Length: 178
Ligand SMILES: Nc1ncnc2c1ncn2[C@@H]1O[C@H](COP(=O)(O)OP(=O)(O)OP(=O)(O)O)[C@@H](O)[C@H]1O
Ligand SMILES: [Mg+2]
Image 1: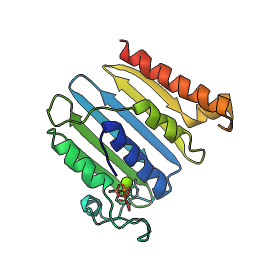
Image 2 (image 1 turned 90 degrees about the vertical axis):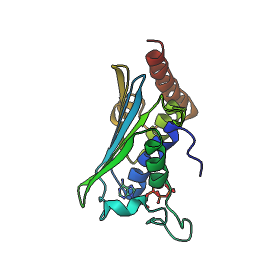
Image 3 (image 1 turned 180 degrees about the vertical axis):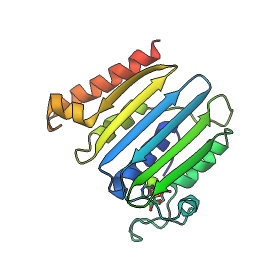
């Protein structure tokens, strides 16, 4: 697994929530010229011992397919390399919130990468309700599974896939043009 961009980290942490069985996931990204801050909040089962998850050999995935769990250790290493941090708040039976901050001007900060593709692949999941709030320099947009469902129904054709992809790309592009 190569987590080469900040978008890759966002994807891994959001996928953790999905794999844990969350039904609702809220992803917030707050970016400025100086930092990239994101949080993923889910209503999954929670984590018993939050310190365990930073151990590379801790994973609850089937041992046949996964002997290590590297997403969170990599995230911790990558944030701290920039002077940032990762924080986990979790309550059994309630859910988990992971917050991570990167300082973009640090020489060791990874590039932001392709967030639009990450949002697209998360929103393709029809079983989990995603709410994504994306801000850059105080300009924000939000996109959620419920609203997509309301206007497009199930994403079950290539034309709907294209519409969804175009919407996300357009919103992301509008932020960049500020
Ligand atoms: N949101 C979450 N809710 C419940 N458990 C979680 C959550 N996020 C992580 N975990 C637990 O922490 C473990 C480690 O997560 P981590 O992302 O580091 O590795 P992984 O997902 O198991 O494997 P990888 O990310 O390398 O594919 C998971 O196996 C899971 O048990
Ligand atoms: Mg993971």
